[in-house]
Image (tube, rainbow, N blue to C red):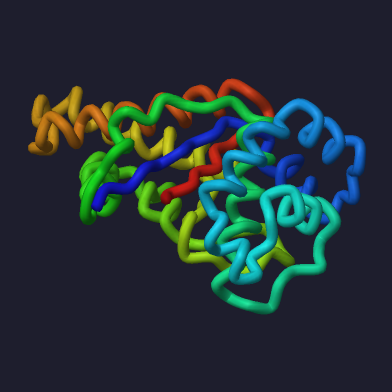
Length: 206
């Protein structure tokens, strides 16, 4: 079974602030412009909704209003997908062809590649965890993680330090070509974010 990674460039603090913002105007815009998307999601998760999970718009409204949330842990995925929808609407989608689809421990393998280049401030494997803004309930799928502006700045400093060392020694860490390509894609995400004040990366693994 394969997984996908969706990654967005956005103002991390502003995006997290949408949770509990009670912004009914935002909700109305989403329902008006993206009603077909909400309907498709409801069709896809029709069985879960029949079992009591919230519908897409209901989950989205709960996220924007900071609750109430279903107490059933099997319903938590809908709130995570609602938060992903907010990220997709307010952020810019970043190239993800090195990560979608992927299998097994690929995110861990890429992290090893990042580490080999001295980059420890960020981790793509973190996108598979459940780092959702409070008070959203924890969800296994989709996983969610973020790279803050400070983490990205530190990661780019770490890469620059390694690059200088490689230039001086003439010896680069031995990495498989596909790992190098994925690491370069991660660096591309970070450079996009570094060019905009307050911007970072939020990713979802599903």
